[in-house]
Image 1 (cartoon, one colour):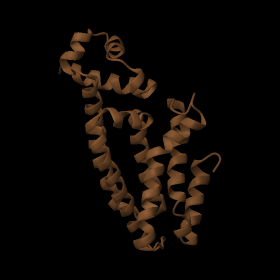
Image 2 (cartoon, one colour):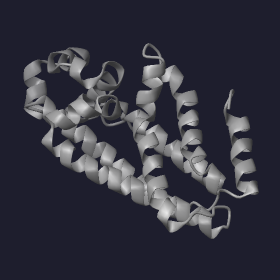
Image 3 (tube, rainbow, N blue to C red):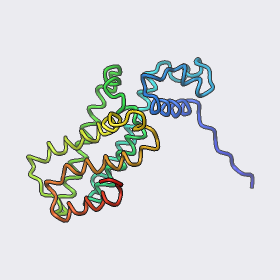
Image 4 (cartoon, one colour):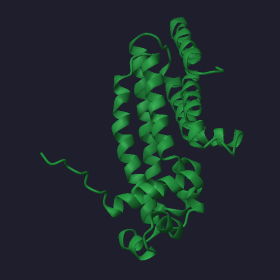
Length: 221
């Protein structure tokens, strides 16, 4: 039987993949369409045929991110304990890392791209709803005791950490924080600090479980 060869990726998909890599490495404002076409080894005209403006590349990449986020946030309903929550937030940080240019250059992107300005508000809303689902799930398992009046501001604070954690890491170490070798420890620290906001509301077993996870996964909890 003749071996089947993989179908080559379409040019439009290759352009998006390369653009994402360049945006993540150098930051969106520092990447021109000329650089993208040169990296791909195609003419600027070929690039413009598929994406006539840089904004279209940004919007298409955001749509990819948003679709993956929508799928991931559904898992919030399945969280029942601290270990589930750690895994959920770590996977969420992995997705944020995969599209880190959105978070690295968030203010610039929102001010220059009207669609992102409106749609990123929905991203924050859905993240907040997912975090509240996590709190409900842990609460049903009796590890978390939080008054409903406290749940909303705590969920908001957790979303703030989720949204700006990579910026915090970048400020601490601008030369290395967003390099691939820094990803693992940074994302683990992020998941831990999101969950640390629950420490005042966790029972003793829940707090011990969180610190045990930190000891297992973090070199310096």
